[in-house]
Length: 565
Image (cartoon, rainbow, N blue to C red; front, side, top):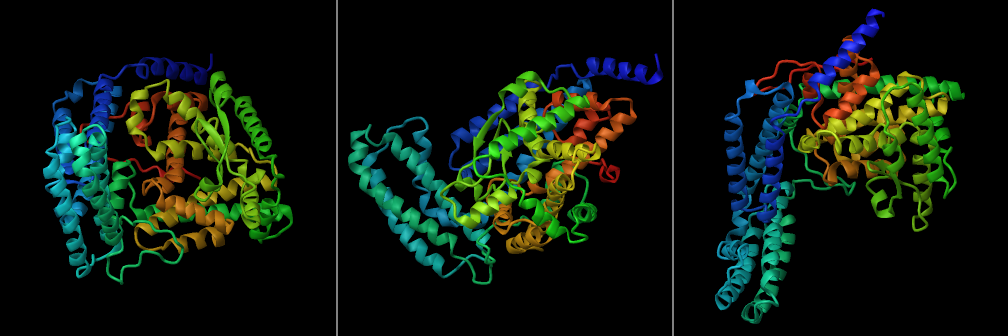
């Protein structure tokens, strides 16, 4: 038996002993998630002093609970879970404090509500209200709102972000008030008779007040750069803290430089493919050629299915990862609505693959842009990103292995893993034609651009319109698709680091792969073990796979980007 074979067997034996252990922290992680859910379910007025105080106590209590844990007595699995849970508590506390500071800056706008809030609190236990008194409180509050609006007209907020926070306070209070009112209305005759009209009047006033506050800021604060896309830059300090909490030991400037280097590599490879197609160095013309390889309307589902079968066959022929038969059997296929295509112009995936392609309601130009942007060569590297071994396999495996680690989910693991497979497949000559190469490179350079424009936006160095222009001019996007990408990045629920997590998470997985192969693992062993360990930042996964030293206050330190070529 050769030495390499002996090494592989040794790795397998170590893996079976180390990674099969159950973590003593599993139930504690589940308890934290349940507590968090229970409190959010109870304290629905999230923009209130009560909410911020209660969650400050929540995080403080959990820090005390974690301090009492005997860290050294834990297994490596338990130490990993401890580090992950402590980081989750720190992350929650940091962002809570950020929002609390912003809340305190504008809390005066809800001073009229102090006599109403007890009604919202008492509703939780169904206490019968003094309906006549409550009706008068509502009536008085309506008048107070009128005077508050007049008062705030003379002192606009310093910027639109502060005005938006003030508006959120009123919307949040209005939500809580509506929930309490609906609990009693129609069930308590006395309440219904007294409170109905004063409540409706107050509710109208609150809607007007929230709308007024949202636009009550100094003229020098630019809210819309003309693109119609309004996002909220978080600034350099919050970016650095966010990166540390995601176990990324680089500054925003360092990440931008890495992205720019990757961008240039992609551009050079696109020029090579362009030359193969006969367009010389004019990669944009070559890209136009590829865009026009779209399939006719109605045939996109079959094109996706063909690409899926091709990629799965390619991966299984090389024995790169175990793809369970049930996973291959149970993924679904859906069509994306025209409304959703406005923020997601390309297909999405997970438990299902959601196909973005024109519908009959769309304008002619929008139909062509959708078809061109979703041509089979652009889709060539992304079907496996969304299905197997990408997001669908992630959902499948994390539902069956260490599912308690769900709260530790991070886009650097979720999107990084899917992007990592694009890197691996490129290196294994998955694309054979210049069109396929351009399709893969289009998405690779797009991920680089995402890092550049998202970080520069949050640093205040780029506007949404400049982000759109970058995608159109330097990546080759159709304008509507570029606009949708930027809108998706800044106006939905995606966190600020989400867009850079694709490439950076991919680089982390690639660096970790190289380290594990140097230790005698096979690619299949590495890929399978990643899927069995559940969601977590890749640096912590590295500590688990390599049994590296951990401590209670572990901080990010793994420099991974130099491992990529």
